[in-house]
Amino acid sequence: GAVVSQHPSWVICKSGTSVKIECRSLDFQATTMFWYRQFPKQSLMLMATSNEGSKATYEQGVEKDKFLINHASLTLSTLTVTSAHPEDSSFYICSASGAGGGNTEAFFGQGTRLTVV
Amino acid sequence: AQSVTQPDIHITVSEGASLELRCNYSYGATPYLFWYVQSPGQGLQLLLKYFSGDTLVQGIKGFEAEFKRSQSSFNLRKPSVHWSDAAEYFCAVGASGTSYGKLTFGQGTILTVHP
Image (cartoon, rainbow over all chains, first blue to last red; front, side):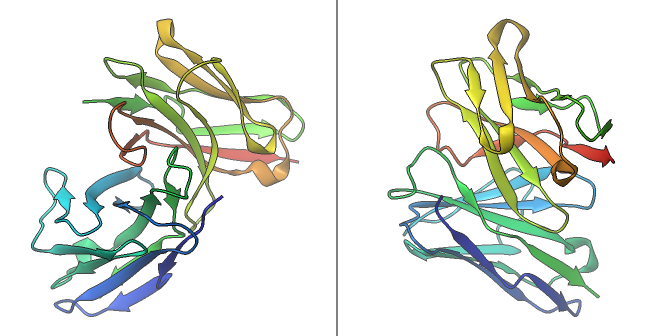
């Protein structure tokens, strides 16, 4: 299957700082990327959908000014958690779908564990 | 809006025993259905998916699932579990007509395998 790489795998940051997470499709063009959040012992919740070159569409309850998503190219989307606080600590996972990836499923990155101290 | 329910939070089976993980969905039309597996601290790996056609779907690692429209179910099965199958399993539904990646996940079922 197609490969999606997420970086970093884990990050620790101080409260009030910003953190950027990258999601790359390595062998296909990802026309659409998705960002999910998974709290401990909970399921994945979709945060936003981003299409290359367009503004992201956020799910209800997700603050777009806090979670900045950029999808400037067909192989890269970034999620920036601005002014992070301890309650933002979570596991963030991206997925990508698009041409070359078969367009019948989205492929997931390995996730990023964010800890805000 | 669609929803997914996995009634079993935690299941324990012996190695070599059969396995069935339950998944019920709510959606007005024919859904796209998926089963994913997640090892601790890892991303998700797709086991199998159903879009249309044959309601019995074969996946990787010896897993299969059957779509039953009348019961709104998509249960995952494996005839003989291996210790390496211990992980968390997520059922997910996607709305037809939307991107295949916009998914609603169930709460997950943790599978423990005893030797």
